[in-house]
Length: 173
Image 1 (cartoon, rainbow, N blue to C red):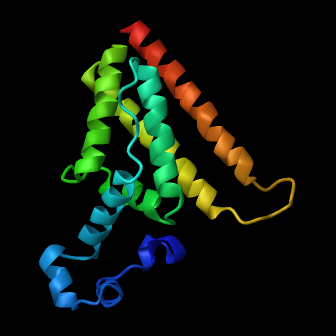
Image 2: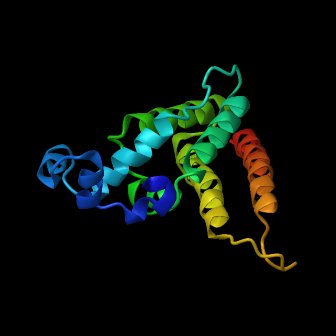
């Protein structure tokens, strides 16, 4: 349902019906649609967790960017949901693992906590924002329209630019 209709189309009753249970039973596990979507986005991430074993912080951040992008691009609305409503939810275990790994990499790079907080925001906007932009594209041949392959390639360039910014900020500290 989330892949075909997007996560915003999910509601407790249709999900319960699809699972063959009563909505009441589903409410026993989640308090509302927001909680259900938070669980769903974390479960999506669980299926695509990045390799966090790379020896250097840059490789780990690249791995995280690729994995998070790949995880959410097949589930319309998931990246926008995270950016708009659950970016500060810390109860989801997979998202928390990713957040900790990002902070560890940024500390290893030499950033202060304040600088790391700012870079986490930038990282999130780059990776999840790229998914949101990609979702909004239609197959338009107009030369002025954004093309999907360009948006996908922009993620790599933006990640490179972010890593350069991290090195610059760390060097200035």
